[in-house]
Every structure is written in C-alpha cells, then in structure tokens.
Length: 162
Image 1 (spheres, rainbow, N blue to C red):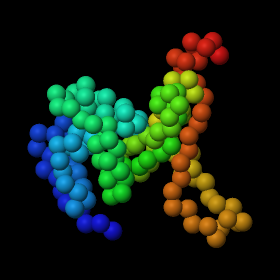
Image 2 (cartoon, one colour; image 1 turned 180 degrees about the vertical axis):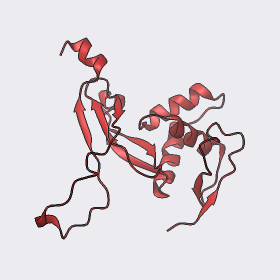
Image 3 (tube, rainbow, N blue to C red; image 1 turned 60 degrees about the vertical axis):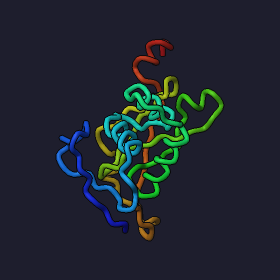
Image 4 (tube, helix red, strand yellow; image 1 turned 90 degrees about the vertical axis):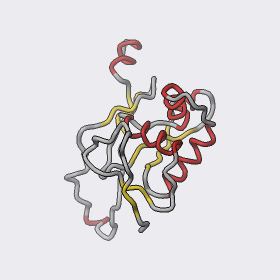
C-alpha cells in the first residue's frame, strides 16, 4: 500500500468537498496534475483524455499537450487515484479506440450508456448490492464489479423516434 499525504486545498475549486484529498506520496502535485484532477472532480461522468484536454483548454490560458494528459492519467491510474474503463465515445467514431477515466471516490458507479451520443448516465443504486453468489461459485471471492447498460437516452430516442 502506498503512503499518502494530504494536499493543501487552498484556492482549489473543490476545496469545499468535505475533507482533505488523499494523494500518493512520490507523485508531485503540479499545476497540470491539479488541473486534470479538478476536471475529473467536477465531471459528472467518466471522461476521455481528449475531453479532459478540451475542458482544460477551455478553462485555462496555458497550453497543454494531449500527451501530457495521457501521462498524468497513467500516473493517476498507477497510484489508484482514477479508474480506467474501455469506452466507445466520440473518439471511436473517428476510428480510434479510447478509454474513459473517473476519480475513485470510495465506492463505485454503474452507468447507462447511450449508443447514439455515447453519454454515460450514472445509475443511482448498485443492483448487485443484494446478490449472493450461487453454491457453484462459493469458492470465488469477488473483489469488484462493473455494470453498463446500453440503449438510447431520451434525447436520442426522441430524435430517432424509437
């Protein structure tokens, strides 16, 4: 288990989150990392590196390279700050596969994913909370799970007249 340190939140947009941010020791708290962390903190859904880049560029006057965002996300993932999931969002439409990232906030979230616009809608409850393993899998220890439901959001459903 990596050692952690508390981060000074003074001047950070999420300083009122109700507690200190626990940040792994050995990972410098640079302006670029603060910006990526801020975007992920404010996001209501997992974001691709390109989406993070676009939000930072929109909000900041300084320039960032997309490769910097990927390196930061990789460092965050290695230290357990973010969770990475395969994603078929807007970058997939251009023929490129990508991933979505979200902060680990203690717990997990399941999503309904729109097949048209690729919006990810968080589900309020975990449907697995009350499921018990069957006898044939009792020798298996579950450590985590993910659930994504695929379909069409209201806007896309209405546009497609489904």
